[in-house]
Image (cartoon, rainbow, N blue to C red):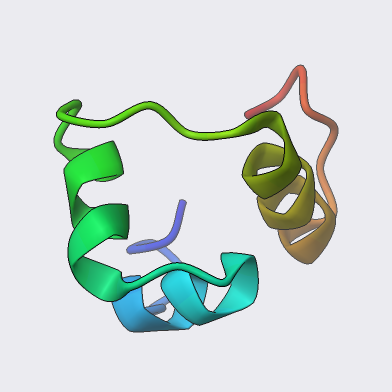
Length: 52
């Protein structure tokens, strides 16, 4: 979804208050994402957590 909308990893990392390299690890399955971060991302994309 991030790439479909032309957003960078840095954009999402800034949104959730995380360093870009740590967000990259989340996308690559090397790190877990917090519920708080999921909520922020879902709100940004105007979707529910179930959709994410």
